[in-house]
Length: 99
Image 1 (tube, rainbow, N blue to C red):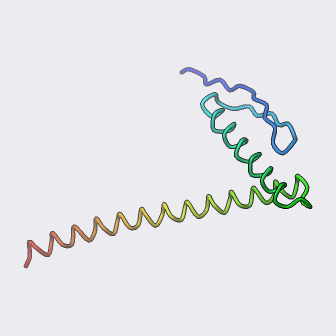
Image 2: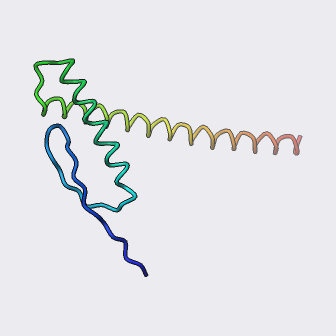
């Protein structure tokens, strides 16, 4: 069995450098997330000039987490809605056959 090799990347998040060891296929996602975090931190610092980097980073993380949770809820609702539609169709077919 072939062993998967991780590699090290360095990224800058809110003016601090971090090193990560990860699989190559994850690098693009990590760098994209870092770009989004940094962009939001910059927006928050421009909007609220009295906030330091730590405050802006905390606000950005909270916003992103809430958005993720809301997206998960929407996906669950969509899944449940699809299941209900399927059950409803099956019930209608059954009723057509029996009536």
